[in-house]
Image 1 (cartoon, rainbow, N blue to C red):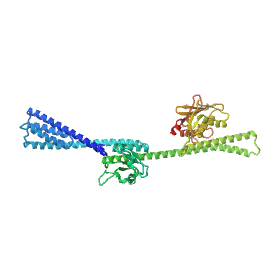
Image 2: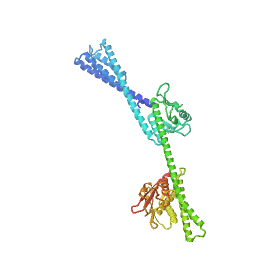
Image 3: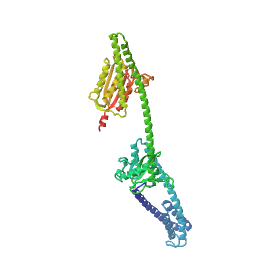
Image 4: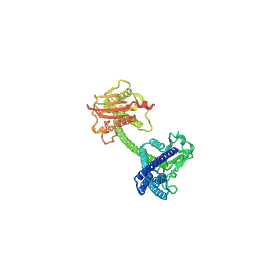
Length: 534
């Protein structure tokens, strides 16, 4: 930043640099004067005329004015070189003549010194200003890039704290909101100040920061006292500096920095204002992104809810119509139907009722998992027992089907909500039952795969249509095609399976086997339960 931003330590460092610079300039001036004296002796030996020799001495004065800083060294060189010329060149040599020529030469050299020093100082100031602007631009660009790359408030606060301490040299505070409530604010500690919280977490300091938060228009970059571009900041009773974080005239928070050695200079205020501006911009962008994402999620949720309702209404209509028709036929018979006909109708009613129960179970499962206010209550469950329970339910519904279970050699404990995972296995098994022949084998396999438990259900049925492989676990609106998990109606089993497995932090996939039939597999993490308990 060129000029130090704050702190007496920085001013002491500047004083040390000035002393070192002065010693260097004195050394340069002395070296050039000694060189001028040596050259005067050489030129006098070769009998060079005095007019030519004085040009050489003026050249040395120019050289001193050019390579040193300020007017002092040029003036000193002009005086000393004039004396050297008078002592070594003018007659009598090696003695001071103090003739009228001495003040004339001195006057000429002083004019040369002033002119050269003025031009030199202007060029150096312009170069320093250009370098300072470049450094400030680079710093501002770096700050802007880092803060704008932050995707959450915690990252914004952390990055801002780093720059407050790193550039201003003292502890800082970031109030994301009204600073007045106790406990608010994140403090950035500097090793020079000790605990950052104690410097800001007092009633008086919070009142000062609250004043800035409530009146952001009074503090910041604005025309002040008739001057454009002046900076105004709030100085607390302890001398701390506060600036507001404002977006579209709405206060978002307050930045503060500890100032034990006096107010920040213009560079420090400018840096704080830039930092507050970038923070406000990023916070507003993140808010807009969050709002946009929320709208997209709500839109997608409404779309999914509408598709789910269409799917459920379509699936409910079929079994209800069948139950109504069968029961109406039985009731309308004047004579009792024969036993075989009655059993057939009652069996059909039972199957449709079971179908309705499964639809309701799936609906309850997906409702539980999709409810944002509800968290899964995972416990360590034996994978073999959960699979056995699901297989037992399916066997009761389909007693003639061949279902084989293959498990690991050792007990496999998996963090899960057993009821939901059992529902997933039931859905996959029913999908295999509906899409394979009655005498074919259905295999349920459980094994470990790295840090996951892998469950799979495979059959030797008709497989998955190629056009459905990319949309296996999506809801298909009525009229867009038959779902993989349905023989009658559309079916929502596979989409519910994905919802449940995703909620458990796992993944699910389906594919066709080379030998024929379909294979559905899902995996659940084994370490989540242990990590959550730490």
